[in-house]
Image 1 (cartoon, one colour):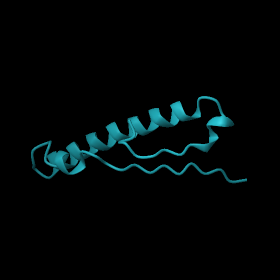
Image 2: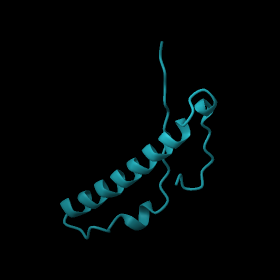
Image 3: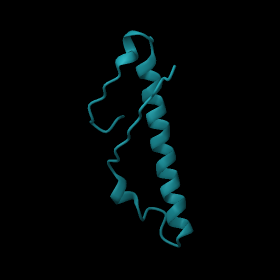
Image 4: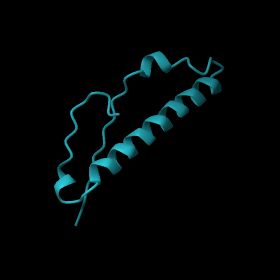
Length: 68
């Protein structure tokens, strides 16, 4: 899920399945970021869910670039 933000993926017409791959990547990075926040909180001696309320609707940005 991309948190209700408009998603513009122009390569879908050129590369079939591109959007599905990018959406899986977004989801995986969201899971990773939540795990890292939990580890940060634990490392600071706080409850593991200390930052959860502040990051309940994160904004992810992905800029896939292709240089020639």
